[in-house]
Image 1 (cartoon, rainbow, N blue to C red):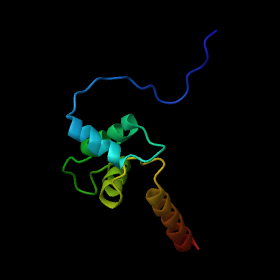
Image 2: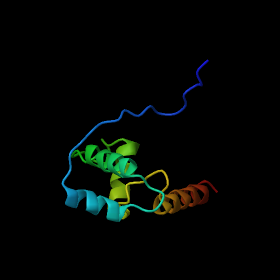
Image 3: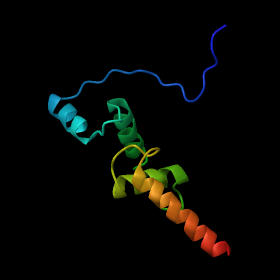
Amino acid sequence: MSRRRTGTRYVPITISLKPSMIDEIEAKLNAKQSRSEWIAGAIEVKLAETVLTTAEATDVQLKLALHARICGCMKTADCLVMRDLRRMKREIRDTESS
């Protein structure tokens, strides 16, 4: 019996990049971040860049655009800057509801 898969399924792809671009990406990675994760984050940001008004954009598109503008680290799930923004948002929401 095979084990049950959890989470999102990823499909490996092959791309060709100039060595200088790979060096630039490697320089931006932190110790725990993979190149694939960074490139996937960059693609998400690029896909979210379509010209939309704030009202037309989805929450994900707004989050990615904000993250790219503020931090640009391409690790939205683990980013400390975004964690602090989420905490501030909760604090504002709690203050408004009191």
